[in-house]
Image 1 (spheres, helix red, strand yellow):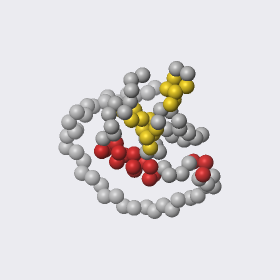
Image 2 (spheres, helix red, strand yellow):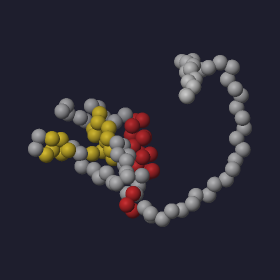
Image 3 (cartoon, one colour):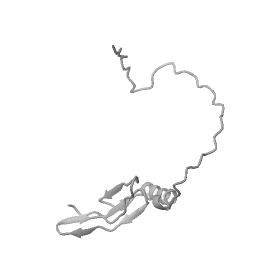
Image 4 (cartoon, one colour):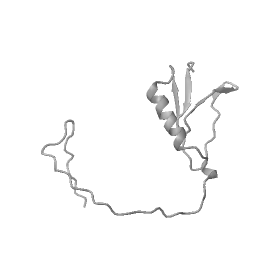
Length: 104
């Protein structure tokens, strides 16, 4: 495995320190049941957009799933009027027609 300058845990927004076990490289992080995980390995230092993303993810995922309530809570909803958009005169560049198929 090539040396990496940074290994980042995207969902939690933190940098990981790789370890090793026998001949394998290991990454120490918890992945909860029904949870999400994403790791980014890069050959260079994280760029400003990556640092910004990691900061946002760290703010949005501060709690472990196990620490959240299992109680169902209904979220308030309300109807809003969304004005119609004008139909396009032509398909956007790069779009192509997909022929319809009739099923028996």
